Every structure is written in C-alpha cells, then in structure tokens.
Length: 306
Image (tube, rainbow, N blue to C red):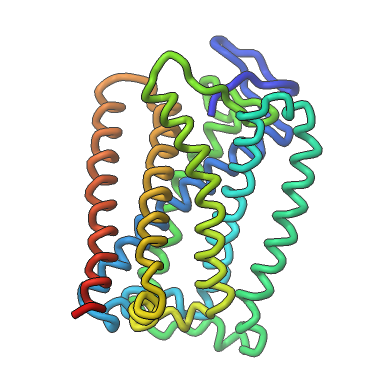
C-alpha cells in the first residue's frame, strides 16, 4: 500500500522512500507473506484437482508434504498465514479507526508478542514428530518426485519475494511510500477501488476465523501425514457443512489474494500495455482456477452421494 512515510525517510523526486522502522518492516512482510500464500493457494488448488483421480492420485500429488525434511517449509507457510492475518487485522483497525494510529507502536508490540506465542506453539506441534527421528531419517529423500515438487513449491516464491524486498526497501530507484502504520484511506475517486478496499478488509476479518479453524484441524488436531485423499472424502462425509465452509474459504481467500496481487503489481508496473496484459492474464487465470477449485468440492460432494 502506498501512503506518506514518517521518519526516517529519504526525499527523492516524486516522493519519499521509507528506510526503516516498524512500518517498513510490517509493510514488506505483509506483501512478502501475501505473495507466498497466493502462490501456495494456487498449488493447493492444483493438488485438490487430483481428487478427480481418486484418493490415491491426491496422495501422490501431496507426497512432498509428508516427508520429514519438508516440515520446516510447512511451518514457514503456516507462519506466513498467521503473520499476514495478524498484520491484516492491525491494518484494518487503523483504516476503520484512524485515531488508533497514534498508538501504532503499542499495537505493533502486542501483535509481535501474539505472533511469537503462536509461532512457538506452531513450531512445537508441527515439528514434534521430528524429535524422535535421527538426522539421517529426517533428511532421507524417499523419492525424486517429492523432492522436485518441493522445489516447485519453494523456489518460485524466492524470486518475487526478493524483488519486493529490493523495491520496497528503497534499494532500487523510484519511490515506494509507506506509513508507520501501513494504513491507507479508502479510495474515493473510483467506486471499484473503494469496493475492493472494503472487500480486502472485511474478507480478511472473516478469513481469520475460517482459516485459523482450517489450520487447527489440518495441522494441530491431525498430523499432516494423516491428511490423505480418503481423509478428505471422509471429512466431508462426516460433516457435510465442510463443503460450504471450504467453498467460502476458497472464494474469499482466492479473491482476496488475487486483488492483493493486483495491488502489488500496479505499484511496480505503473502504466502501459504491459500492465494491462499482466492484469488481464492474472484475472483470467484467477477465474479459471476459482471455478476449478469449486468444481473439485462439488465433485467430492457428488462422489459422496453416489
């Protein structure tokens, strides 16, 4: 998001680059975690598509997540979601109640403390199965396919993350203006932008509840090794309302993520045909992927009734 920065800052033609402080840090991490989560959600929908081939096909597609050496990456993903959610709540509070921005340092410290506590709990619970394994067992690569897919999961995130860090930190040319609170007033010149602004904040608040429930069931109540294709079918059979919950998560999370990606891209691709083409491709892909993800859920539901 692009708003006026406080000290410390460096004046340049056309604006100011914020070079330090909690505002810069939280703003960068929010974008980085957002890009990472959108990319993973894209892969998650792809993996769910394998349910069309039955539980065994889904198990094969998600085999990388079952490997002990992948656990730290899984923890990193969950922490990215947790950070993005907590910081999103902080930003939404500042946006709807601007008077609270004068307490942004206290709010930051409270949020940081909550994140640390959650991070410790996540790390202990998710890494606990590794404590009884030897190093040889942890780093054993049982299949080349799972290793290759793990690289597909992890490596592509590095490039956009490094680019955002480079541009956002002021190491490149051009202004990247942020505020100590990362707050951004609702746009008034465009009805679409105003609706998008409202959607990002309202959907974010709803998703904090839904996604934390999803993470609790998938990563705390059950170990990742128990999340198989049959588990997915059995979960919907035991509790049919999960179809509705997962559809709501898919709709809100996917549109929230795509709009966030649009905002990031429009900050870096200012004008011209390149911007129009990139946004059009992302929009088209987003609609296709959303329809595909929904089709998977309806397929599972029909399969249960068959």
